Amino acid sequence: MTRPTIHASAVVLGTIGILVRGASAAGKSSFCDRLVEASRNKGHYAAWVADDRVLLSSAQGRVIAVPPPRLAGKLEVRGLGIIETAYAREAVMDLVVDLQPLSGIERLPDTELTSEYLENISLPVCRLAENRFDEGIRRLRWVTRRLFPKCPDYF
Image (cartoon, rainbow, N blue to C red; front, side, top):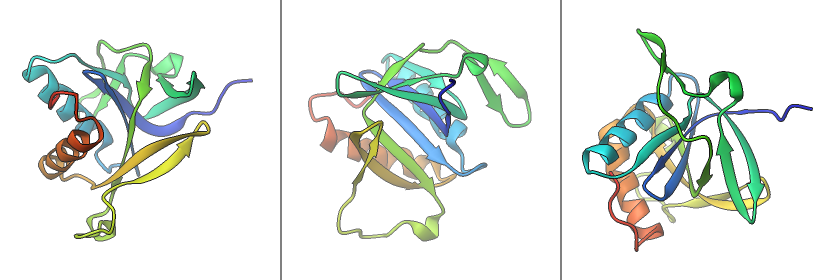
């Protein structure tokens, strides 16, 4: 039996795996592309894991993301089509980013993060406004500084 995929993209930046979810046209691919480029521009390892569809599993208490075999190494670039790219065959996911309409993002939330169980493992969830890339990267940078204080700023 084939495991179902989820509608998301996944990247690894340095030692941090990020799963980005959102509706169609929310900017998942564009946001991930900006994260990967920003991390590489700072001299850090960064790679795509999967674009648009992701397979999740668990191992040793960690959530593992892999690309579906037929989509491995493929990215959709709106207006250009499907392109081939280098990719990580799998990565541990440490954080979930949910891209949502701006109207659904509280300006001063009681807590900046929530958590959610994926594959029976709790992961922090950060909600960011869809298609607002600079603002999203800025906020995500502050979130990762708090969650992973021993890691450098990867992006």
